Length: 121
Image 1 (cartoon, rainbow, N blue to C red):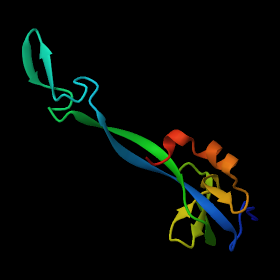
Image 2 (cartoon, rainbow, N blue to C red; image 1 turned 90 degrees about the horizontal axis):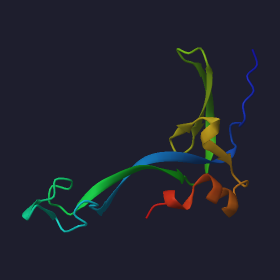
Image 3 (spheres, helix red, strand yellow; image 1 turned 30 degrees about the vertical axis):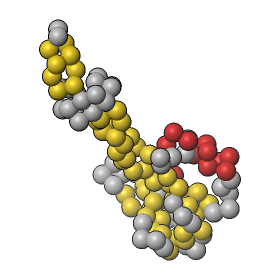
């Protein structure tokens, strides 16, 4: 059986990865004042527990530095679907959907892949 792969050993690529990021934002309920007043009774904000800010989580996509493919592995999972894994010089592995050929990325392509709102603050 011959398996065609999108990339070969030695190809230079960039890896796209997603990571969960936490950002602290001003509490929308107390507007950062740490307390609220209801019916003339002032109490600590139940939304932020009196901290004045809350955590907002989001998945952010990033481009990793250029690396090289050092190995290729094919595997069939429980769903009986063939998956090709590319092992990278930097120690990670990825599927073809998470790789971009080096030299084919421009600032316009980068903005399309990773919208500005996902960039690190």
